[in-house]
Image (cartoon, rainbow, N blue to C red; front, side, top):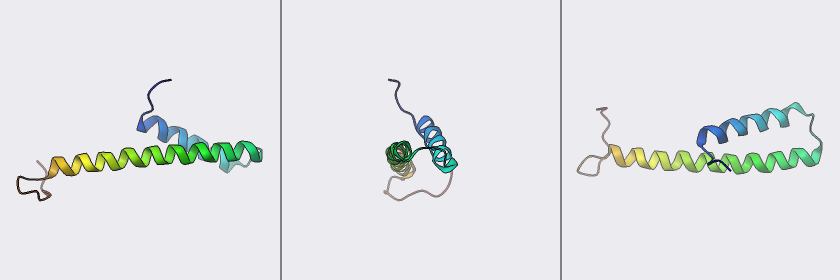
Amino acid sequence: MAKQTYEKALKNLEDIVKEIESGDLPLEQAIKKFEEGIRLSKFCSQILDETEQKITILLKDSDGNISEEQR
């Protein structure tokens, strides 16, 4: 299976939301889609948290303070 990326996960999550909101899915299928949506949401949230941490590290100056000016 191909490696999951943030972009792919977000697209899949958006598709799942549309499917569930359409109201056309049987209950069992809707529950499975909901569970998959939760998994994708957690994956995306984790990626965003990790990215935020990386950006914070990159923006810290030599004193450990977050630099507010853009370089």
